[in-house]
Image (cartoon, rainbow, N blue to C red):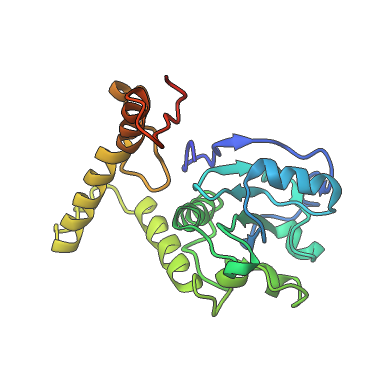
Length: 244
């Protein structure tokens, strides 16, 4: 997300069909959670929605990248329920594999989805995220005609953790000014070590981001080793940047 406070997504590719301009006088009252039942992001969803009479406001790809296909001010065709559509902002979460693996979702997608829920609740003054109230689910909003969002719905294996993370991010954004920083505990020290290690390997401490290092030509440490091996013409080594 480029800006959580203003809900500026990483990328925008707006649909020109299969949504309704405006909200017919309704106000945003809740977020509705979906999973894609495919692996993809904004572009893949945009292509599907060219033919399928459906849409959503936001998409989140397997790396956690957030896209927007319908502006918040307009009505996405997402919940199989016109009343719900007009009052909802819908989020599509990519799966990281298909039906054979039981539709898993990557940690990056789950984390950024929960963060987006919190940001929407804050921006539209919906209050702290609460399952079944200001955070709802496609299977319930549709009257049971779908199992979507599958593992994210109440009782699903991701649901409880997802909601806790949404509440965490909401609380972080709504802390009063001057709130003392929490006392550093052993688990938070370990978290710092994990982030430091990830930063050394990938160039970023953030989940789902792998920008590499400038001094390595934009490569991560693993990619840099691969580039060196390719330069030395070692068997099986390939430079992902294409250097020879």
